[in-house]
Image (cartoon, rainbow, N blue to C red):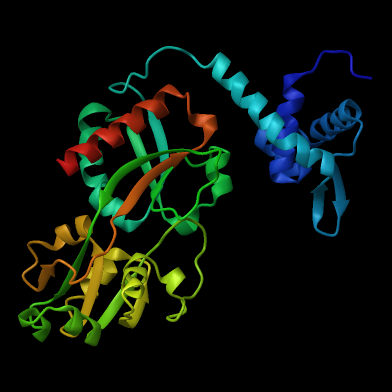
Length: 313
């Protein structure tokens, strides 16, 4: 029977068990033996008067009670973490810290070079692991296995904290040998062949349907609003690849302007404004509430925002 005293370790055990849904993996994560983990699960079942995890053909499956408890326990552990978090400021100059950050190649190529330069000067002991959207799930971010994600998001879990890094317009890239450069209009744009590029959100992507305007994104939605459609010859999820393809003399790549700016000194391409209006996009940074009050994380978030503002100025 509940006696008013709860071992906080048990709540951590349950949080990990519900995440891993495997006693052996949960024990390994916590540095416990499997018998100790099994004993902890037994105590949890007694505490909550519920089996919590039941073995099924799909492995260890949470009960309805366990699923109800999961967000509550996550919040309790986050509050405890905040309460015991050291108040000492993060000493960037001497710190040894590893940040795991997910970013598209658009974000990686535009904002990370100046971020890296700033880190080399202010925090030489900081190491970055930049991951692709396909490497990461929202669950990884929620549980703090990934420090932050920098991307454009159609949707994001409400529990996440987020910050807009910048807004960006679009630009068109095409070869200097492309005849369109002498008559770049909406009509000639629509008659040309195009490279489609986008990687929004996170997780493993799926194949594209050229007729699914809603999934095609900003450029094609903007065209659809004026009753037009472009001819897409190739789909890619990599902005750098799209801009390289634009060197071919019959293709146009319409990409965020800050990415196109990287090609400003490329003698093989021309950079022009689109011949129609495309609403700007927002590049955002998002992170788990579990890391909101971590001093080193706060320092890194401030640095990223400061660098972004310098790039806008």
